Length: 411
Ligand code: ZN
Ligand code: ZN
Image (cartoon, rainbow, N blue to C red; front, side, top):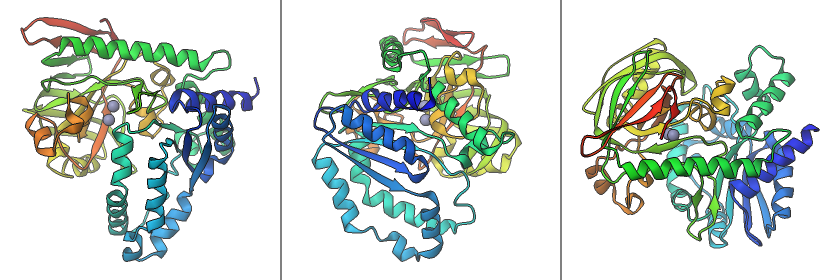
């Protein structure tokens, strides 16, 4: 099969399984100029699926960088009204959103961090109505990825640029369950069924706590909030359209009780934080808070993350992933959360997702906090899963249930 046919398969998957474009629906594609050839395939596939109009919102990491350098803080904080109106138009029209991740690693190195922060906050505030709408599943949305040469060289530093680029394409396709011989749409139906059945089983148990152990030294008890909800896999939009927020996705995740984490956890993969790789690190928790930690490399960076705010020393997410998955089996560190957090059981320091609590998306911040949900400006996932991970759940009546044996679900 020629490469182009494989990419067409991927584009069709994104359009039909990712956002599940409906007949006569508007489609918005957020993409960087690095991915223009693939974007053309997405646009074609969207029209084939019945889209009424497809609008690509181009961005360019270098243009943005020059903007940071060349504009004053005041200008960066000024959000042109027409950009807000444009987003409002897409919402009013019920458009669905495809976002293609293709990071240019390190492009903003050396930019005045105050400028970036102020611009970021202004942007976040002005477009909060969009993120609330999208994150609240007001419409179908999907985050997917396509490579660029800069990113590829970071992932495969030993390969020549073009080879690295091809290798990253192959890795992304494999991770997204697109192969020469399969029907990825069928494959995803089965995959989703598996994820949803694990959600249903785990939700049924309503475990009070999870106990993680492995030979590396992880021995951690994570209590879960009352009325927690296990999520992962496909979701329904407000109108009832089934879609997949992330391609790939492998996780079943829920909300830890902020003050109920105790023991030690040893990370099994490096963590990229603000462009620095933290390696061979561990945390000790007491009553939810990190009370001790270490790292063989970039401990200072880890300290910065932990000291970001009060919530960054507490957990906001616990996710279970089978050790046997395409991403995990590849052994590749993608340096991008969409992939790396889907390689292994993970925890996140920082903000919890309101959707992981029954009725949580309708709660105020105070109500969420009272329920034991962690709040923070950061949400940083780190991996601690392993082939010998054992997980035992404890139910409210004290009954213990084996959830993972040797890195994989047994329920
Ligand atoms: Zn996660
Ligand atoms: Zn996360």
